[in-house]
Length: 385
Image (cartoon, helix red, strand yellow):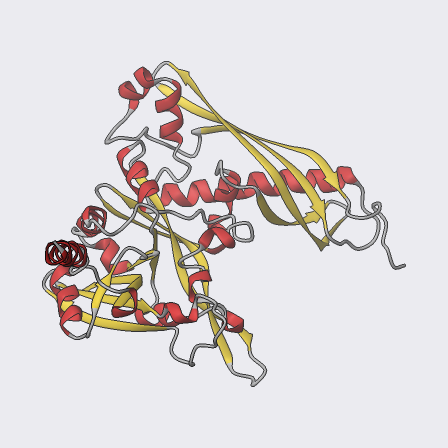
């Protein structure tokens, strides 16, 4: 009887253990944090960023110093071939479940295979729809080697956690795979990808430069291919035309003195776009509502002056970005989608290749309303005279 019990206990233990034989231990795996894709001379170039989670998670015992991340690089006739070459050059299994971002070069965006790149990542069982997608004109390896200042965790970088800094750079809205699929599948079948560059505004105590990633503009991609890139101040109008924007900055001049500048924070942003259809033409009326906060100013200034300056500047930025979009044949504010939601029958009658034809006169009116102006702690008077 004892032998029978021992045999059954041993058999149970063996069965339990056998269920774990194909499970990889966390410390025996490499973790993909970011991926860069370039295409040159009809070859895919893949940059794989592997992160060291020992430098991310806190523990009671200090971890030995080591690199925050390693960058692997390989070429192949297909993206998958390049990735398998990277597999062959490392020692442990690679886990993709923690991949946070994908960044593509301008050449990759121009490729006729760019949509298939997205499709490959979306189909893979370990990747998620929350992966952020960006583009760049900089060398991919340099972008992936940038780490946050003050030795912060690499998982808090602008590439992998753009929402943590979106309140400071509201003109560029983060895009993940879910947003990308929706934007490409719905009118106007275009998506605005954040354009990443490197700046060197920071230096450490040893006077060495600390490069940081910077959101420089947007790259426009449609379901039919790459449209182009818009940079710098030409993109500022997008921050007033995005439903998700909660805060943005604005530098204005006042009527009383065109030489003095005033920077204000605009908050509680509300947006309404109304399509107006007449016969076989459509125009759009835009209403923007903001609250303003003043951080500092020179001399005497009134709330009416500030309100006029804000209204004038916001209108200028919305119009400028719209016209920059027309230059590369893109519906940068997705006005076609507003008509699609408002009157699908009219949209079907007017649309061409998924979007409504647009001209400079397609925006009939831009109404900017400054709900209230907060002068800060006190009044519209200088604190120190």
